[in-house]
Length: 322
Image 1: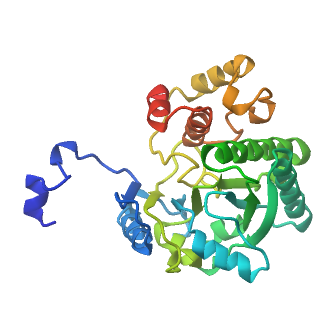
Image 2 (image 1 turned 45 degrees about the horizontal axis):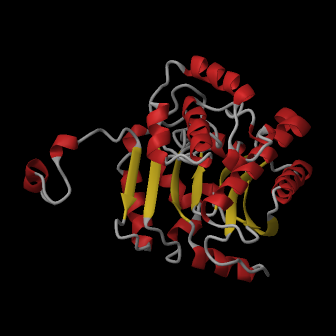
Image 3 (image 1 turned 60 degrees about the vertical axis):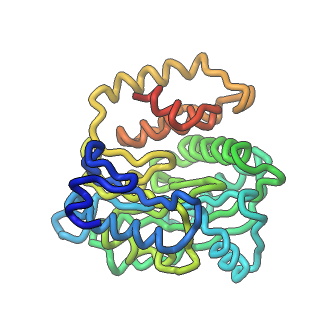
């Protein structure tokens, strides 16, 4: 498009619907065709959002940046094969991108907790892949807080689509709850960025250019997707850290929720009367719905995720949240 096209409107674009992106961008191939170019376009969008971020006193530590893409099956299958295990067909397994403490004992304990939680819900551990990373691009503050980063693969054992998403969701929530109970603050670096049979998130405490410099995966031509959601933004209601970078598991969100405490209290109150046939009779593993220590955006994401996993469409869930 040239400037004249933008002013006049062209194709699907209408200037009447123009809004500020405010640190969020999305690229999609509306035919559903997956290609690495969508990742590159996502990178371009993110670089154009650099002004929405903030840097620390070292000028190299960012508040957070990330990208959400569809699971690149061919790439992950090849990587898994190099490590001695095979992946099921696309959609029949889940992949988690997990932050864990670098302390070896805590690192192993957190992974054991996640594996046991998955097994509790009938999922089978297939294997793990340490995610390649380049910390040389990070600022001092981000490097000092850097977690260990691993992809973990789980066989759905015949489950697929939304049924598998629900199991992965329940397993992740159980692992989060048990880790808090067993390890307390010492395992605060344990965080599951995404655990899905559909999407995969790469994120961290970055400035926009550092995301693609840190994760070599994102430059691999085999990483293909029809969808990319990117996020770059300074923190508002919280201090920056690795786990609160976005996109989150369902949403990417900017802005401050001024009624945050009231909404959180209402959500806790609702837990006593929640029931959902889709999620089973025992919902204890899902509580608290809002993960402690989350930002306003993270709490919003927790609530949307629950509504969607309970069987509502995403547009329906978003209207309920608004």
